[in-house]
Image 1: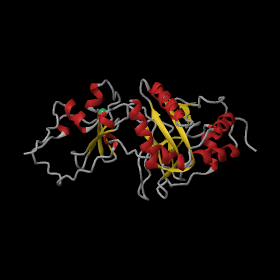
Image 2 (image 1 turned 90 degrees about the vertical axis):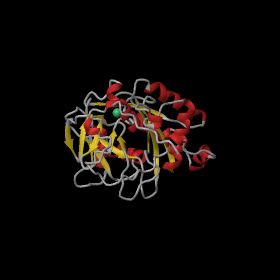
Image 3 (image 1 turned 135 degrees about the vertical axis):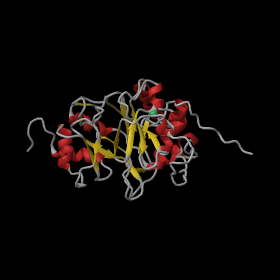
Image 4 (image 1 turned 30 degrees about the horizontal axis):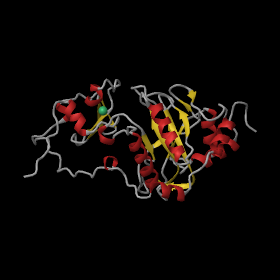
Length: 315
Ligand SMILES: [Zn+2]
């Protein structure tokens, strides 16, 4: 028996069936970091996800994040579209309506600043196909995609990768119906009563996409060029004496953590963002490697510093 106010193991089992792709998971920190963000981390002992952990998640005792992609199959039970910018809900509703035209029922979940749109599979679908489908849909609807075509704001599609190596985890997303540690509240799906059983009933009732349907959706489509991963650039060994652009001449990092300096991203700052001043990670070992976690591209960062990347001309 479970205590009043606590989710049952039966509810946890129903939830597991809907959302869990692999037994590795993350937990949201109870206390915020210096910048106020509540990070997700993998449990120290690499413990596997159990129904008891899910029960605790559903009861609000802890908050777990799930991985979208299982590297042993390269498949996922779901696709989640995360949007948290100003017009996020408009874009998610646009996507939901358009999906409906394909016969796909997508469930809209509230989030802290926007929402997550969830699509479920009858049986796990190839991440590659799911991604081709959603990115093409977004492009057709002119819904902005974060990182695509240099955009710092836009939707993010989970799975974030087409494939993973066996030792990779990819990106995780907050497990629905848990309690967000920062705001200490639960975010519900709009489609049903705000009660756990009603929500699970609703999610189970949604029409699930079959492999045949997905194959038909992506027939003849490929990943739009602007969303393809860029080829890795091989850099010569780092030589601090060599004359070249040095980002550390332009930005002053606030602090150092896990092999990186962390600084305010100049491109974010230009748009009045990155108030916490830690979107830009710069590798301590090789400062030529830097990355904005809000998705600004190198060209945008260089331009914001008044040091635009020169385009090499042929000949
Ligand atoms: Zn940025």
